[in-house]
Each structure stands twice: as structure tokens, then as C-alpha cells.
Amino acid sequence: MTTKTHPRKERTLVIVKPDGVQRSLVGEIISRYERVGLKLVAMKMLVPTKEMVEQHYTLDPEWRRITGEKRIKNARDKGQKPPSEDPLEITAAILVHLKNYMTSGPVVAMVWEGAHAVSIVRKITGGTEPLSTDVGTIRGDYVLDSYTMSDTDGRAIRNLVHATGTPAESEKEIKHWFSENELTNYTIVQEKILYDVNLDGIFE
Image 1 (cartoon, rainbow, N blue to C red):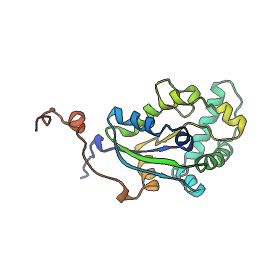
Image 2 (cartoon, rainbow, N blue to C red):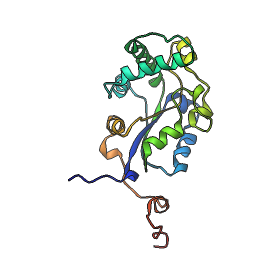
Image 3 (cartoon, one colour):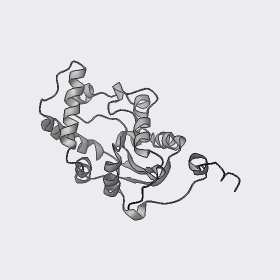
């Protein structure tokens, strides 16, 4: 019989991309995740190699197809012509642009832990395209980029942050960017308020 892990132990990967670092938004981005109650359990700055970036985006063998199909649908929904009708052709170009983008300067990689961490981080971060995502999210508040501009300029969309899509992806991505001994297990005081069932640990 397997023991089910409590949702409070879910972890997710976040990467502040080179544009986020260059615009001095690292602290602001961290504070958004901290304020909701997530716990930072790993963080480092590095300049990734193109090989590391390609491996990251292709950890999921379906990434190329799914991402290409999304871009085609997004263009059609806006009444625009997709850059190609072939999803794999689209993502081949996207991957080249991503490698150039993600290796253009230092990034800050982080692991956040807490209840429903993957979904919460995605909600706070906002949708992939800053133009169409909601005000109140990181991308909606701090970026004015769009697929139209990135396609016209022949580059990756600049959206400040990478946030893992699913818990299954999160496990793979964390292992790709961090070794086990770089992850820290510890307790913070606010966990008493967030997770103590009866709040009876307050006066201990």
C-alpha cells in the first residue's frame, strides 16, 4: 500500500528568465509567491547552456506537438493566420528562439513548496502570452509582449517566468535543474496557520 503525500508537500519549479533578472523583478516575483503562503526550498542563479534549455523543454515528449497546436489555435481564435499549419514546424522554430532567449543572460531557478503549489504558481504567474493574460498576474502586470510581436520579430515571447505545468512535469523539471542535496527541508512559522487542522499549535 502506498502512502499518499499531503498536498502541502507539493513542489514546483519556477525560473525567472533573463528579462526578469535584467528588469530587476526577481524580488517582486518572489514576493508574489511568498505572500500566498508558498515556501521557498531551493534557489540559485546560473546561465543555462543551450543543451540544458532544449532538454528542459523536451522532458515531455509531447511538448512539441501540444505547444504547436496551442499556437495554431491561439492564432485562429484571434482571426490570424498561424505561422504554419504543422505543429512540429512551429515548435522547431520556438525551440531555437527559446534557446537564444534563455541563454542570453543569468536566470534564477527556484523550487516552491506548498498546497497545490503547481496550480497556485500558474495562477499567480498568468498565461503564457502577457497581452491576453489577466491583470493581477505577474505577466499581466509587468509585461506588454504578445505572440504577434514575437512572431514578427522572430524571437521567443518575453514573459519573465517559467512555471511548471503539472505535478508530473514538476518532478522531472526539478530533477533537471537541482540535485537532491540542493533542496532544503525545513519548517516556517506560518505553516501553523496554513496547515494546522485545529489551529491548536499557535500557543505551543
